[in-house]
Image (cartoon, rainbow over all chains, first blue to last red; front, side, top):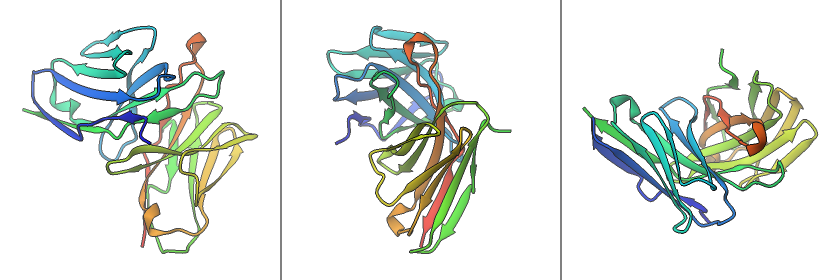
Length: 114
Length: 116
């Protein structure tokens, strides 16, 4: 049972345009969400996160939006740059008095076209 | 040097062989994790440890075992490797940050394991 889903395995975007990566979840107990970026031959690296008490978090070119009623979050990258080409994973967590662990989505491969 | 180091980086082994993947970290984190990545399935949690005396099964622990030798070391073993354990394996660490219980995980570079 995939509790965190990324329905688009791949996405291509022109350089300078906006990239929008989507993630859906089914467990309403998730209260913290993260996005990770992964380059080939490297481990995932943390990109940006959002708590369920917020609906938006921004960090430079990256913004994450959370729609709790729809159980949906999205990552916006603007403007997109060639170095953004990577696999992006969303992840979710349930606060449980220290017993937290992350549940990951299946990933979306983003390709930025120069 | 990387904060989270995995050895080996690549390994080919035969079906039925025992193999150990090792992970060490210099971040001083108590929490360590083993994930595997498969195409189309994302990252799935195998085992995790919140301190040296604490070991927990993840969602896909069958066929695997772990050992937390020290705060900095967490090993994953395949007692009798089978071809469907061919995957990319990642070790990760995390720690609590502030009152928000942030659990940003830091990953190693991965071990590509092929079982033939």
